[in-house]
Length: 440
Image (cartoon, rainbow, N blue to C red; front, side):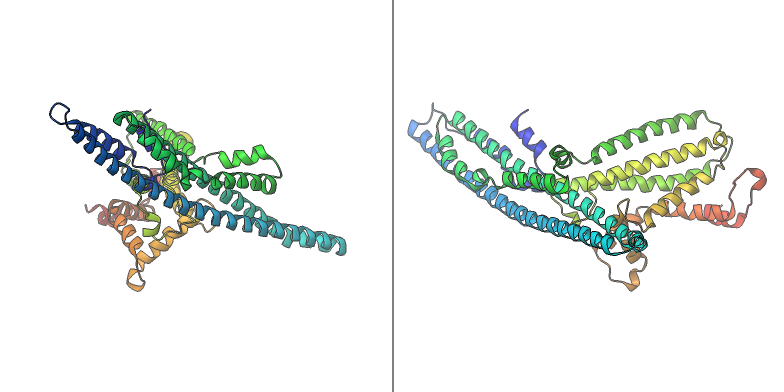
C-alpha cells in the first residue's frame, strides 16, 4: 500500500486538516520536475537557479507544515494533560469515598444491633453500592475513552513523522541532493511533535492507574478493557446481516404465502415505521459524512459533547430496529401458524417503539432519547417557546416524513374503529372514519 493511501486510511477524520499535506507536497515535486527547463535549450546555471528557487519554496512549505503540526500537537497534548489530571482527581475522590463508606459501614456493624444493621443494609448500603458500581463503571469507561484519544494522538505523531521522512527522501531522490535529509535533521528531528514523549508517559500512567486502582492489579484484564475497540462496529455488522437475511425471507414469504386476506392496513402501518428506521439509518450515514468533513454537528445541533451518539451507534440502533421490524412483519405473515391475532403485531411493534422512546430509565441511549423528546416538545409548542437551529432541523425532517405521519394517523383510526383481532366474526366496522382517511 502506498503511503498516501495508508495516511488516508489511518487519519483521525476530525483532524484531517492538521496532518501533513503529503499528496500536495508530492505533486509539487512532480510538477517541479516536469516543468524544469530542458538541458537542450537552457544552460546549466539557469537550471540550477530554477531548482534552487523551487527548493526554497518547497522547504518554506515544509516549515509551514511543521509549524502547523507542532502547534496542533501541543494543543492536544495540553488538553490530554488537563483531562488526565481531571480523571485522576475523580478517581481519587471515588477511592476516598469508597474507603470512607467501608469504614462507616464497619463502625455501624460494630456499634449497632443486628436488626439496625439489617435495616441499614436494606436502605442505605444497597443504595451506596449501586451508586458506587455506577461510578466505577463510568470511571472505567472514561479512562478507556481517554486511552483511545491518547492512542490517536500517538498515531498522529507517527503518521506525520513518516510522512515527512518519505517526502524528504523522495525529494532527495528526484532532485539528486541531500538537502532533504539535512532539513529533516535540523528541523523535524528537533521539533516538539517528534521529540516529546509525554504521550507515551500518559499511556503508561493510564495503564498503571486502571490496573492498580480499577482492576485490582489484573494487568491483562486492564489492557483488555483499554485496548479492545467498542463492539459497536461488530454489532452493526451483525444486526445488518440479520436484517438482510430476514428481508430476503420476507420477500420469499410474501411471494408464496396465502394472499387472500387484506394486507393493506398492515402495509400502511409497517411502511411508516420502516421509513422512520430508514431515516435513522440515513442520519447515521450523514453523521459519518459530517465527521469525515470536519463538520461539528454536535455543536450545531446543541448536543452535549460529553454524551452524543456516534455514527456507529446510530447505525447500530437503526440496524437493530430493522431486525425487530422484520421479525414483527414475519410474525404478522405467519400469525395463523403462531396462533396470534394478526393485527396485534403492528400495534405491538409501534407500542415497543413508543415505550423505548419515552421510558424514563437510564438505559438504551437515555440522554439521546431525552434530547429528542425535548426537541420534539419545543417543536410542538413552537409558538410559546424559543426555538433554535436543532428545532428547525428536526422539524424539516418531519416535513420529509409526511407519509409516516399519515400512516400513524391511519394506525390510530384503524385500531380505534376497525380492528380485526380474532377473525371476521369479531370485526367491528365504522365506515365514516375510514372514508375520511382513505378519501374514498
